[in-house]
Length: 253
Length: 98
Image (cartoon, rainbow over all chains, first blue to last red; front, top):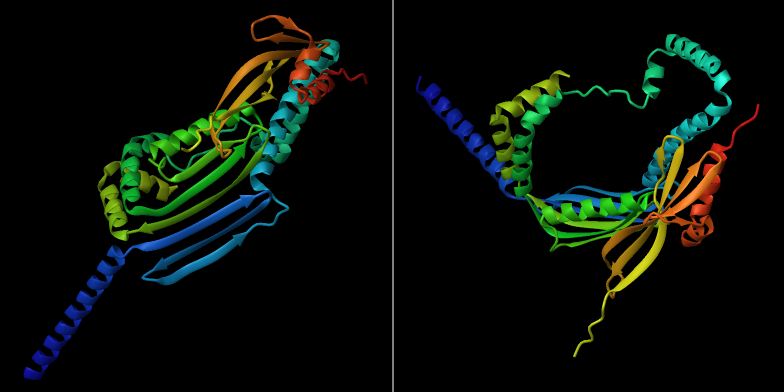
C-alpha cells in the first residue's frame, strides 16, 4: 500500500513537472518573437525574391523565388482586362454603326441570336451563364454578417498589427496603368494608405508612370512577430458574437 | 553653403481611356505635369484636361476644354499617340458591306 502511494506521488510529480515544462515552452513560444525577412524585386519581366522565417536564431523556413522572364502576370492581366473591355465596347459600337444601315436585317439577326442563345443555354447550361459579365458570384458568407462583423475585424487587425514590429521597411514602387487618369488616382490612393499606416517615415517611394502599363520596384522588410499579442487578439476576436457568427457561416459554406 | 536646387516640372501629353456615349466615342487629351526632385524622385503630379476628340460614325471633330472648336491636326500634334486611337476608332465605325 505504501509503495503504491509512493508511485502515485512520483507520477503526480512527473506529470506536474511535464505540465510546467509545457507551460514554460508555451511561454517561450509566445514571448520570443519570430523573425521574418522579406525581399522582393521586380525589374523588367524578372521577379526575384526571397523570404526567411527564423526563431531563436534557427531558420525554420527559407526560400528563394524567381519567376520566368517570359511571363509578366500583372501586365498580362491588365492587358487581358483591357482587351476584353475594348472587345465588348467595339462590338457594341460596331453594332450601333451597322444598326442604321442594317435596320431591316437587324430583327432577323436578333431572332437568330435568340434562337442561338436558347440552343446554347440548353446545350451548355452553366457554361453560358459563366460568360455573362454581370453574373452574380455567390459569396461563401452573408454580406450582412460580414458588414456586422466589420468593426470587430478592424479591431482584430489593429491588435494583430500591434504584434508586429518592423525593423526595416523599404518599398520603391514604380507603376503605370493603361489610363493616365487611373494611374494618378491609384497613386493618390497608395499615398493615402502609406500616410494612414504611418509609414511616411519609412523608406517608401511610390512613383507613377504615365507611359503605359508597368510595374517595377523592390520591397524589403524585416518583421518581428510576437505570438502572444496575436493570440490575445484572436481570443478577443472570438469573444465577439458577430465574429463567431461570421466564422460559423464561413465554416458551414 | 549648400546649394538649394528647385524641383523640376516635367510635362507630357497623354490620351485618357475612351468614353462612350451612345454612338459617340470621346477621347480626352490630358497634360500631365510631374514635379520631380533633384534626385529624380517624384514629389507630386497633376493632370489638366486640354481637349476632347469626338468620333462619331462618319465624322470626327475636336473641342478644346474651353469649348472652342480646334482642328484635328492640332490635337494630333499635341498627342501623337492619339493617331493610332483615331485609326482604330475609324476602323470600328467602318460599315461592313456583306
